[in-house]
Image 1 (cartoon, rainbow, N blue to C red):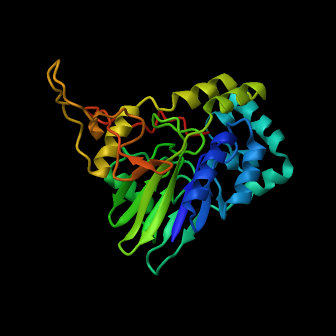
Image 2: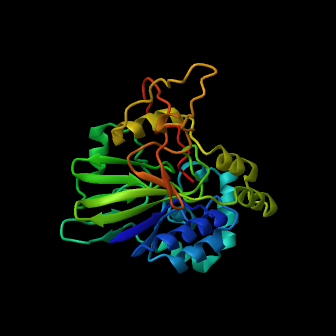
Image 3: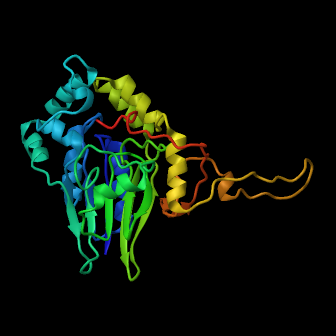
Length: 317
């Protein structure tokens, strides 16, 4: 069984189209959109229509709840904030029928290739739609989110940052964002979970898309907060990027990058970059990261003491 999971599309239609095109090449058994479908992008309705048409399951994210009127989080509670204008603009673009559909989305989805080997898919974590499972969380904290989950693997998004981790025998993986990546790589990401005789394995795939088309649409359609949304889209990282990268390496069992030995000046020696010399464009891990059929691992800088970042992440959509 093979399950493709894209999350946090956020109304970025060009990125969504590129991801779905790559998924078609992978030809999975199931496709899941794991929440945060429309808010923050220039094409909320078109994106939602495409996802409902192409996906076997569509799940609820926190911003989908905001749009449906179930509750509000973060700055969307503030009356005079630009996010309040963005929320109303997106609601107007979607229209009442689509808002009702978003409000009725399920929390999670299960796939069972064999008894006791379920894959559990949700938006943020198995308990709620808001708490981010970032890789800097300590073992005791992360275990509390999964203590009542009967599954062999869990896929989620919300953080917009791909990584995988073991929690006891449970494999967990953030499939990152198909609309607004925040791991230093502008390319949209999604996850492919494949069940094998040895259990579930996960691959994070990256695809290229016309970023300028997405940013120009935010301006052309006069999306509230457009300049800041463009900045976040192009910035593609959090303030504590290094802490996240170091934690992702650690959970994947990769050593910190060491010094790079180079030949003396004038030496005529052909040089091929090793993985530790490659530019940092995606979180390093034992997951395969691919653009089309190309796969590679990337190095990451190390911060001496990983910082708890829960209080500084912009995760309310």
